[in-house]
Image (cartoon, rainbow, N blue to C red):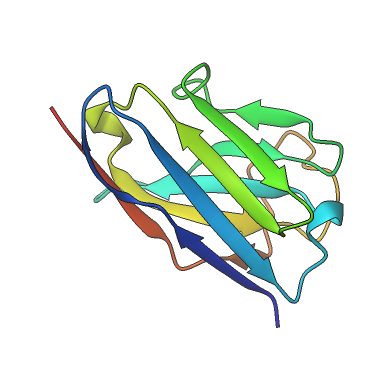
Length: 123
């Protein structure tokens, strides 16, 4: 059974940085599209960043230039480096994976999800 486990969330002040990690098990990491999503209270879940098996990345406009998605295939771990954090980045952050190697420039059709890690940014 595929398992995705996020870590690295926490509380920071605006302008600070955090790095989220997502460890995958029962899963061939290198051959899947991976993504980071977030959901703030009272809001719908939204895509933040994605990376395919070729390491081609995509970002939501709200985080482009501040967040960087990367992965270590040998460690089966996905990362999200978040810099210049803003209070509006406060949310539960989720790691997700598709059964396909390509992301197809969409935030839809992710098959596997982690349990989430909370990020809180204070002003």
